[in-house]
Length: 128
Image (cartoon, rainbow, N blue to C red; front, side):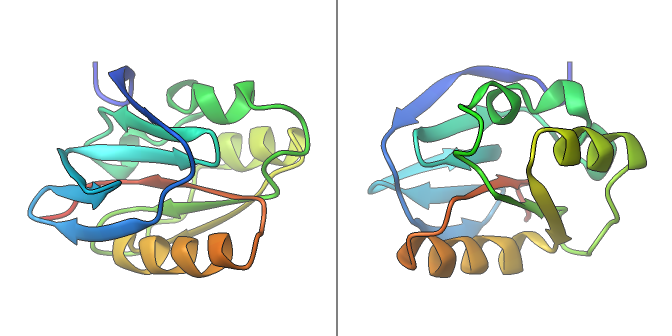
């Protein structure tokens, strides 16, 4: 089912080294498909489109210790797509601000903010 996580997980805090061609490079590895990036690690995420970005598909974000994520950058593909109201409300209830943007902008912003020591996570849809 689109939007679910699967077994892929790389522990640790990593920068996004590259994106495109349907995947990402991080931790000197490459991954085809979408990812969720947190300070605890990077999760493979089967989301294929903005329609797959729903509260139920972002489990690790909601399972993270309260206060460990202040901002979620959401890479919605090649274009900015607003987040569904239900997701924005669920994130707000969890104390997480959200900022949707294109995947490229989200990956670059994530790297900057993590370098500043911010409590940030990213949900990034893969782009061609």
